[in-house]
Amino acid sequence: MECSDVFKCLFSIGENELKIYKILLKKRMRADEIGKAVGKDRSTVQRNLKKLVNCGMVRRYKKDIREGGGYYYVYESVNPEELKKWMENCIEKWYEEMKKLVKSFDKFI
Image (tube, rainbow, N blue to C red; front, side, top):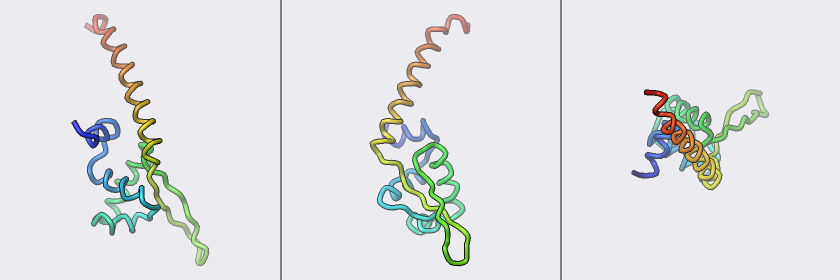
């Protein structure tokens, strides 16, 4: 088993999302910039970003455009140490829940 397998199991995150997470560790970027960096179209990157934001691996910030109005979003990865602690907590909670379920196995059958 590899680290990428843990992300797949916990978050349903694939290689594309992991690549984006790693890129965003270096600096905040817009979806179109990420698309250029990973060689994917913006809509694909936006779907990947949505998964990453929903599972808490990436944060999204709204930036207002001063001239002409409007806004855009920039994204950044959660600090790896923060993510690691959060993942460890998730795994511990999952493990405790599984132990309870196994203990109640006789009631299930």
